[in-house]
Image (cartoon, rainbow, N blue to C red; front, side, top):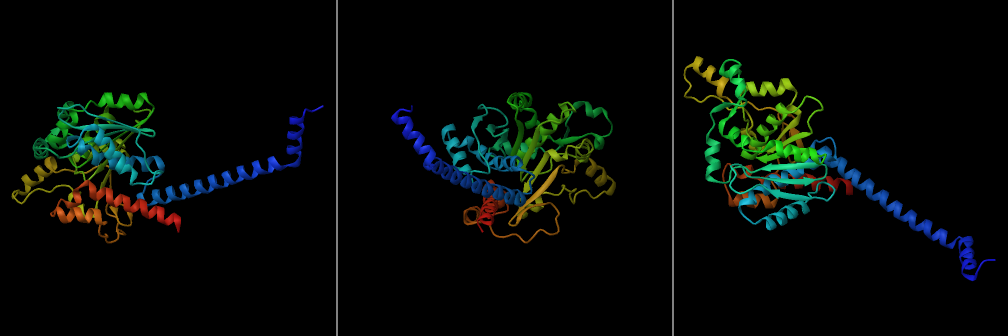
Length: 354
C-alpha cells in the first residue's frame, strides 16, 4: 500500500501533468540555447570572414593583441588597478563572444623594454610597448644593421648575414624570452607576442629568436601579431624566414592610410654611385617578412590585393582624434586601429541580425 504522499505523487505522474510541464520547459530552454548557439556561430563565422582568420581562436589572438597593444602604453600613465579597468573597458566595447582576458601582469619598473603579460583563453599574450619616451626615439633612430645571431657573422659577406635594426634588436635581447615561453608551455597555452610600431618590431625579433632556438618538432605554439610595424631586417633575414617556413607565424596589420610605411626602405638620393647604391641596398634596405594585411572598411585584405575598395572615413571617435592631432601619424595611433576593428565587429553583428 502506498502512503498518501506516495499515492498523490503517483497520481500526478500518471496524469502526465508534471512530465508535460518538465518536457515543455526543457524544450523551451533547449530551443533558446540552440537559437543562441546558431546566432553566435553565425556571428563568429561572419566575423572570421571579415577579419580573414580561420577560427575563433585566431580571431581572439588578433583582437586581444589589438587591445593589449594599445593598453600597454598606459603602463606609464596610470596605476595597475586603473590599467586593468581600462583593459576591461576596451574589451567591453567588443561583443563578448569575440575575446576575453582573465589576468594581466606588468613588467617590472626600470626595464629597457616595457611590456605586459596577459592570459586569455588558450593563450598567454605578451604586449610590447611602442615609442612613448625619449629613449624610445633613440632606439628608433639606431637603424644601422646588426647580426641577429653572432655566429652568423662568420657565414660570409655582410649582405649574406641575417641582420636587423640595431635598436629593435637590442630591445628584443632584453626580453626574458625563455621565462615567457616557459609560462605559456607550463599552462598548455600558445604564446602570442604583439605590439604596435616599435613594440611590434620587438615582438617580431623576439619571435624569431624563439623560433630559431625551439626544436623542429613539435612546431612551436607561437604567434606574432603586430600593428603599424615597419620591416625590421635585411634581405638575408627575410630570406631565412621564408626558407625556414616561418612566415605563417607573423602577421602585421596596417590601415590603408599607412600604406606608405609598409614597403622596404629604398636607398636615398645621396647614393649617387650606382655600384655603391647597390651594395648599400643589399646590406641596409629593410625587407618585410611574414604576412601583411590591410584593415579596410570592407574587411581585412592581404597587402597588394587589387580588389581593395576605396577606404571609408573613420568613425567619430577616431575622426575626433585625427582633428585634435593633425598630421601624418594620426592613423598610426592605436585608437584608429581599434575603431576600425570595432566597425568590422559591429558589421558582423548587424549581418547576423538581418
